[in-house]
Image 1 (tube, rainbow, N blue to C red):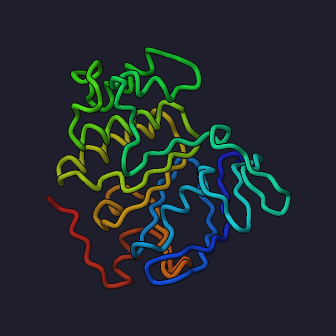
Image 2: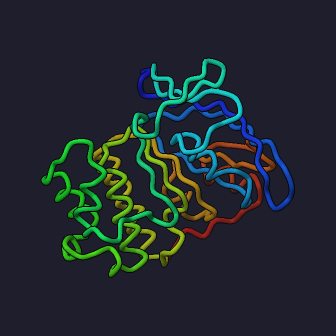
Image 3: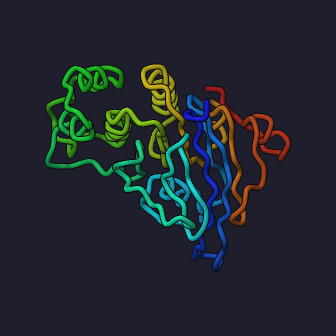
Length: 236
């Protein structure tokens, strides 16, 4: 159905360590699909997430979710982030240090629902930390709280920026499994940025390789990596 599709057609000039580039990104992502953005650092992958979320304004183009227009430069439409049905997990987690784990998750809800907060706490194994300040948590625990909070909005689109960057192998696998379980609770489109081929193969249905500001190639992760001579070690 049209209402289950996000269409992104945007351009954005960026200053990178290698000079100015023109980021040109066109993609269609289905509800229930997990898509990974891959490529060298500084190519605009995080900027793509920020444009979809409404935190960065594209120079040109449009962003649509079904019949809803979130952004259209030519028509001067730019929906506020809170009106885009987006959940986003930042690299720095962006948790509120003065709140408990449960309060952080509840804060993201559009309508307060304690049972759903408790369900998310259980889903991510955070029960023993529910009443603790987020300041006392490890990096991996903070990542799980950040993901639970992103899901608390029941988003149509979940954006994940390097969600496994500070985790060891087994914690990464655990969080990937939790993301898959979350997809069963709240079917949505997921777009994640990752530099790790193994994480992409284990989690994503499709990958989009960004290089020099453009889509270099896309397809099923294992096939894309194999076609480009990248061996993926996703075994324990």
